[in-house]
Amino acid sequence: MGKKTTSPFSKEQLMPQAEMLEIKRKKGDLFIGVPKESYTQEKRVCLTPDAVAAITAHGHRVIVESGAGLGSNFSDIEYSESGAKIAFDPKEAFECNIVLKVGPPSYEEIEMMCPQSALFSTLQLKTQTKKYFESLAKKRISAVAFDFIRDEQGAYPVVKSLSEIAGIASVLIASEIMSSHKSGNGLLMGNISGVPPTNVVILGGGTVGEFAARSALGLGARVKVFDNSLSKLRHIQRSLGSLIYTSTIQPKTLQKALMRCDVAIGAMRGKTRSPILVSEEMVQNMKHGAVIVDVSIDSGGCFETSEVTSHQNPTFEKYGITHYCVPNIPSKYSRTSSVSISNIFTPYLLNIAEEGGFENAVRFNKSLQKGMYFYHGILTNKSIADWFGLPFRDINLLIL
Image (cartoon, rainbow, N blue to C red; front, side, top):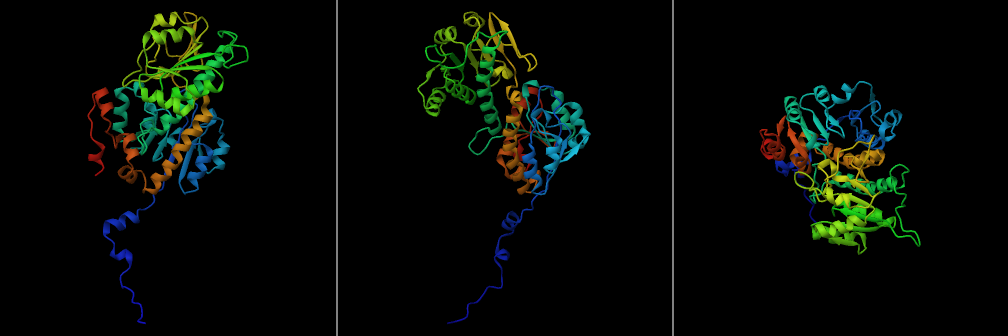
């Protein structure tokens, strides 16, 4: 047998140069700052101590401002033991290359950020002004709204997760209000032998409506779901495994359901604001002592009588109906919400590092591009540009 010959060229040498660059992409080191939330009602935090441990185990640095996790019952000691550096000056956290916040930063906080750094936070578009975007542009910030991030299936993972919490919470909140000695009617959210079950009307068949319906059914309530999307109504019946009452939104049918219900939950959203589905007159005709939980209040609300309330003063009464209209319901359950956000962020951040850092990740990660609304101080979101009359550039033209 002849001797087997070996090629003088290795496989790597025969590869095209572009492919070699792809294979040998250098892993990026992340320098992440987690400042304390400045908004008084915001108790959540973007990274839990477990998430920090996972990130620092990969060689990345994390700076957590002292007290950042207290609203979610995470102590500075837990963060320190997980590998984070505890900063007593907020400026130290804001000077990191990547800043993680739940709420958008204030003008003072933007001033503390380093030029050309990356910001991950919610956008809360309806609360913003033109000045906010001009401040980001001045510092040449690359900003990603994590409520805009979409995955490969086109879903919004953070929004979906927080919507699940809001849906479950809306039923728990309604149950608390009904049993309250001040404004409640003394009803138990359930189905007790020999006692008529509680009636719950849900406006909206999306994620909030689905999880509200699931929770109410689990407690034994009788549930009716209204939505103009038949596909959403079919999905709810399939996912719940129960032939609950569903209907398109017809004023007479809706009014009859509202007159008999004990709890009404608003979970409808529109392109610019939530549609007002329940008029003031319809609210007047509801049962005395009924409860309205308007989850959609952050985009205007589904009920004409809804007015924004706070976690400190969450309810008000109108026509004998108790209204709960807090815009940021998941923050009431801050630890659960923080764990949920952190579970989404951790693999996301590690993937950015694997891609070679933030700049490289922007080029290759489509979901990151979809969530980005500023790239080095240039506005890349057309909706924001149209809303505030600002100049806009397509992200694909900037990252070539």
